[in-house]
Length: 167
Image 1 (tube, rainbow, N blue to C red):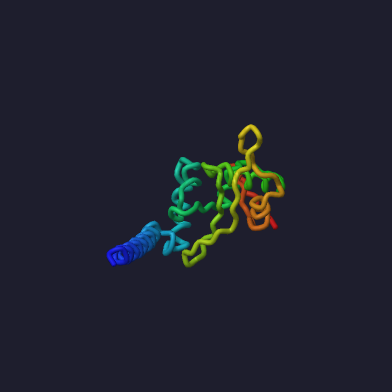
Image 2 (image 1 turned 120 degrees about the vertical axis):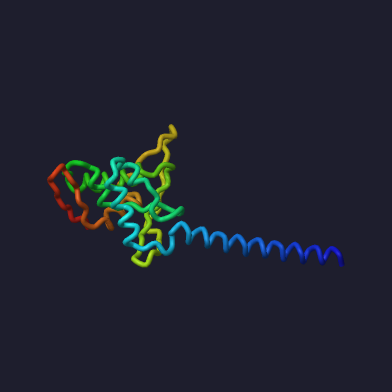
C-alpha cells in the first residue's frame, strides 16, 4: 500500500515537473521574440545592425531568437565588393553562408510576415581526412537551395550597383 502511494506521488510529481518545464519553455520563446516578432521589426533591426561599422557582427547577430540565425542573401552578396559572373556569385553566397556560422551547422530560416519561422534548408560541414572542414561542392543540398531560392541579389561595387537575376 505504501509502495503504491509512493509510486502515485512520484508519477504525479513527474507530471507537474513536465508541465512546469513546458510552460517555462513557452514563456522563454515568447520573451525571445521567436514568435510574435513582426517581419518589419526583424528587417528594421537588420537594417540598423547592417549600418554599423562591424559588418561581420551585423551578419552574425541572431535576430530571430535563440533557435537559429536568419541571413539576408542580398546582404551577404553585397559583401562581395565586386561584380562577379553569375556562377561565381552562386559560389560566393553558398560559401559565405557556411563561413558565417561559427560551429559548422547552417540552418536557413524563413521568417513569414506573421512572425512564424520555418526551416528552409539545413546542412553541416563535411570533414576531410585531416579534420579540416570544407565548403560543400555544387551538388550539396544547401548549395542547390541557395541557387534555386536566392531570387535577385544586389552586388555593390563602390557606387556601382548591378542586379543579377538568379533562377
